[in-house]
Length: 260
Image 1 (cartoon, rainbow, N blue to C red):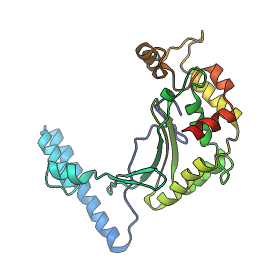
Image 2 (image 1 turned 90 degrees about the vertical axis):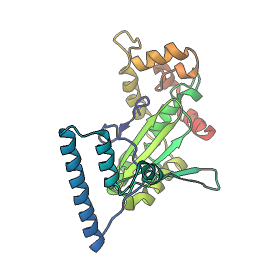
Image 3 (image 1 turned 90 degrees about the horizontal axis):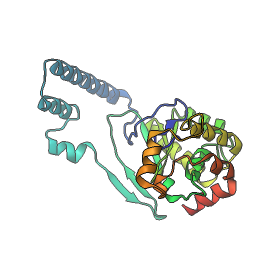
Image 4 (image 1 turned 135 degrees about the vertical axis):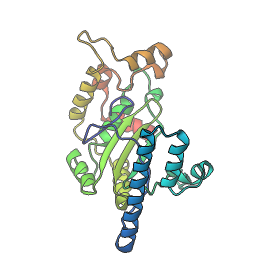
């Protein structure tokens, strides 16, 4: 949403990316999980006490390995953050990072397009498109309907546009991952681009945040990017200019989406 930083669409916060993992448990498994949780709490408390006593880095690493049931640094590197890569017949690359100690899962679609793939005439189109895909789809015809569907799953939506890629993410309970994937797929397959005027007003306010009363750019990130890269696309802002924002319409958004 905002240049590169991204804000949660419901809370306004910047959540860190979380990977797939966790799961619901019942019966004896729940009791075992509770016991594990108590052990982890005890380990954390022990680590805190050690830190107060001036514990060493080795103490901290030992406590961390014990927390995850690991025996060494090599074991941590090999098993604590396993990355599984696969490819679908349509060319989509899938990366899964199980983290069973978490109680939420994140499903993220990362599209390899951003401000560096634009020019002076369409600068800002990737950012506006990111906003518009969250306006709804054929199945969820409004932003309200889309957000309600996500919240009924216990999840939140998040989006961010960067220079090299655009992020679309939903974070939700692990049991609802399949539903989250379905909703994201719906946004990309059947976007309805509704309320373009409303979203343009929102983006306009974002652009104005980086300008002073004279209309001059004052954002350090944008200024440093321009100084380093000049007229190269990397020197342009993520949001684009007010003039470009007025010019961009649904045909330009659909063409950009089709192209990338």
